[in-house]
Image (cartoon, rainbow, N blue to C red; front, side, top):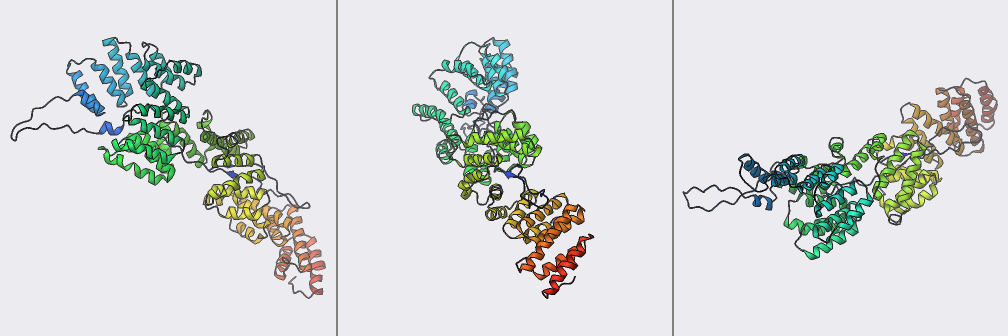
Length: 607
């Protein structure tokens, strides 16, 4: 959650000094769920292999032999390792053959291939360089470029790929590097060079996905699935798209066919966990990952895999974020957004701003998060420019055709109007989503302060009292608005009790100032007199004496008229307060006016 302020002057009594007051329309926006990395991120090639496949030891079939006879040792077959995706086993075999100088066609190329799929990209590059010198095959340049792409070295990958002869793999790679460099003209050129082959169409679908064109990507995957029903991975890709379209139930249903065949797939299990997080909570999501822990022989699956390590931070509501997320900023795009959310939650607006200032938003949540950061920084530094940028970002999302009727869209419009100080308009949107946030502290904060600014103090008081967060309830902004609502709702005694519970500080002095002025304005002269008396003792400002004198006369006036607030005990306390003041006007007020009236009306006062 975060706060943002805009000045709102207090309406003081025309004859009284203006209050310093609660004034700031400090508001909070409920941050959306932390961003999960579901695997098909902009860095999808970072880990083609998984730590499970790295660590998993394949049980080889034992040959049947007669009892008492020794089985003959047979050399493992490379193809068996590749068929089982056991790249650790394949690397071990090939490294042995290389050391033993055994003859195998393209041994170095195969070894590089296995390094790549095991995630050892730098080793793969070194081995490809060795293969280039030995074999001289220029096609190796594009394989080497794939490794560079996986290391996020997009410019280097493109330069390396240009050295290779024209192939469909080269076209696909250049298509993706152009996307990474935001080179639209190059993307169009490579797009036109794509064919209807399955590999090219998968590359095109991946670009559509990365550009947030999820429906277009889904259409491509479905066409490919019609041609090959047993291409199980297509079900995962379709599930990714439905997840991104917020159809979490549909994603789970489609994903199940893949999990039936590959129950220990890190990518699929992670996507299932993410869907459970969106549908339920972090504990339910983390429970889905247990199958991976059980299948891992190392016992450290979560520490070994970036994707799972990142998402565990989200599932555990930011736990260990500062240790886990920074190294992943250039690997998993969602890591940057989640680290921004972490800094916002720890009130580190500048750090959040530094992370997001150069981000070009692509989806509504990114626009919202950037707006939240600008608003948080604007509030903290008093920057009107950042507050204006935040308002524009919120308006952009809230007014868009796709978001205007969604809950986040309406929250954005409410935030936009809040920043513009158009609280009646903000309330229109806040009331439309109120049933969904009845127990949400951030919403109740916003709604309460908006109601207070719109002079609906009873509704504002009810909303503010529903805020449960102790940190929020201790903030001066909260206390000052709540006290104002108490006073305006005819409960000044509750405002006074709130002040009495505070420790002495600048904030308690300002709260007392607000209580004194608001009580005077609303005719609660007894509490106004008490407040001005304390203020005068803390700061002998002549204005505080004038306020105390006016409030004392107000209590006396109510006593004369027989109205509530002028009861004998309150009048007696006011007289005592006046007697404790060293001012020449006191004697006239007490002896000439109040004492004479009390005597004439047989009111017992100790004057």
